[in-house]
View 1 (cartoon, rainbow, N blue to C red):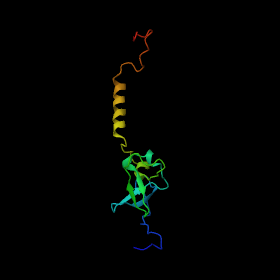
View 2 (cartoon, rainbow, N blue to C red; view 1 turned 180 degrees about the horizontal axis):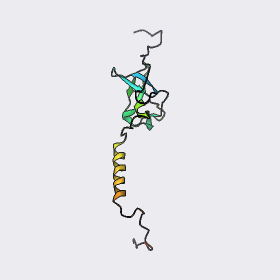
View 3 (cartoon, rainbow, N blue to C red; view 1 turned 45 degrees about the horizontal axis):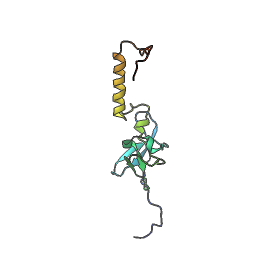
Length: 127
């Protein structure tokens, strides 16, 4: 094994137009010999993105999903264009939160009086 005298080759991906909104998206190779379409020029802090949606760039230009929780606080990642596409519905990123929101909506519908009850004039002696 010798020292490389040239830069490592990067896998070319290019850009494609989204068939839904027409905006450009980066076509990037993954570790699994597949391709993913990522939002160009968008590199949020990894801890702000759900683990299964963090794409970390490797030195050879490929990307991989980075599910380590919690990631380094300064780690940047990429996100799929479909998450930012204005013409596609946003996927359910936090199913428990969607369920909670649905349950809260049903609780509001079940209430007879939309206003919260007033506090009692005198609080009971709690001892």
